Length: 135
Image (cartoon, rainbow, N blue to C red; front, side):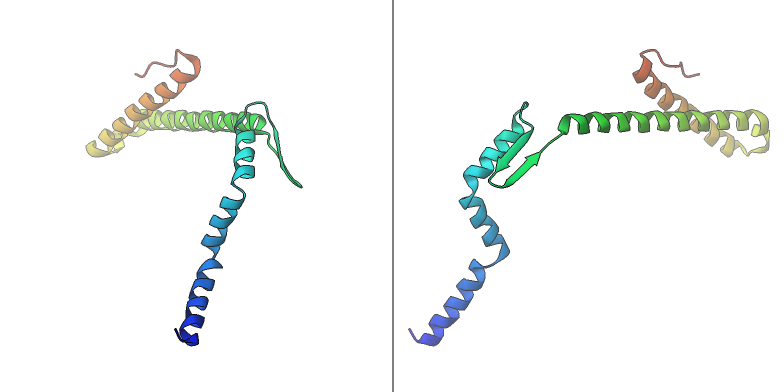
């Protein structure tokens, strides 16, 4: 084999070996035991810290989950409140100005009112267990 062909093979294989995916795969193979230990530590319910050499990671998943749940509940309540406000607006509009709208517009408004009643009923039923009866 001529030396030119050998150099081409070395260049090709060298660039493949130094590519990012290969380096990541190599690092995963080399550090599989410490990485598995870190994952196992974080999977445990009581452990809040994991340490590998000089790197120490602390988790506060309990507080984070609690804050996330509170944020979701607040957003849900805000959405229900906005839907109830919009329902009230539509009911007032229907009562005061319903005769001004065309029959198709009145029908569309009634459909929206009924749909909002159903949705707000479902949402508030889940909160209190009773909810408001849709008309």
